[in-house]
Image 1 (spheres, rainbow, N blue to C red):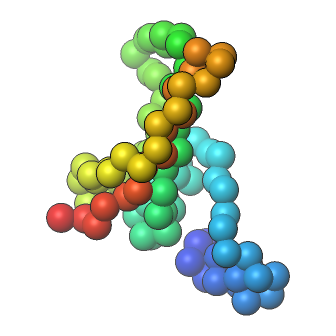
Image 2: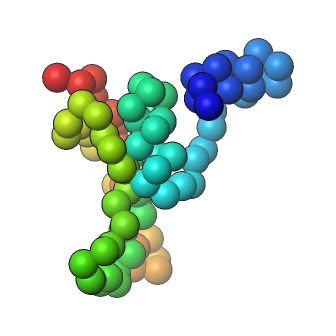
Length: 91
């Protein structure tokens, strides 16, 4: 699937300018690799998950580690921490 073409069609046909993707590592990695990610929003929950096969947020990031710039951080009443990062250009 051509993700860029799909998002362009949403913009042209329906005026969509912002897409929130709440996904696993495969779609997240595909969007990142296609250059379609501007911002990453993470909520860190006060729970530890272990094991050998814990899932990743982004699979198959093709151009190596990507730097993020912190734009917002907020401590929530639930004990969670919400962070928003802007994706910096690949080096």
